Image 1 (cartoon, one colour):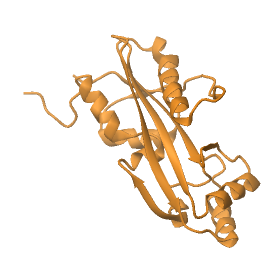
Image 2 (image 1 turned 120 degrees about the horizontal axis):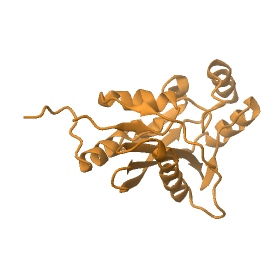
Image 3 (image 1 turned 135 degrees about the vertical axis):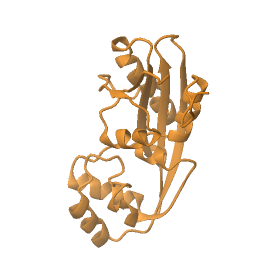
Image 4 (image 1 turned 90 degrees about the vertical axis):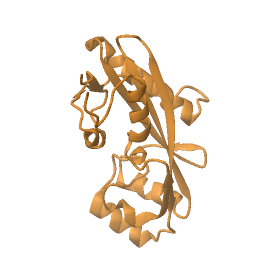
Length: 197
């Protein structure tokens, strides 16, 4: 039997990642306050928000498995948000030049039938090349990644900015760690790519 699966996100990128599993699912945008608590560590923040996003949509779906996700980019222990403007994006890429940006993705799978939930935080490291101002400007003009944490789109032209990528699951960089999600689904009895006898 196919699970009643819900993605608590309106992100088209997360939908593209989840589509890889070939499971039917619905989406619902969670309405929550994503403000970090005072002195809250980045990993604690994304774990909390992933759970809160799943819980926010849970009342709408009975006996469902709800996927909640949240992601932050961290540089020198500071959270790097979405730049919003060209000037802020330029500042972010200059700061990242020659350094490593770590993306932390909080993942939660909430079973609304049992009330049980699983939570994990998956890191992914982006090692940047030394970036010239000319490259930064050209890239920003071409891609305009102003709604992306870290000021790049890894699934598009952002690859020109990187020296190397490091992590267990490349899907984590896009915001939905599939390897971890598969394990969570299996823990809930969901068998992927297996036919019943």
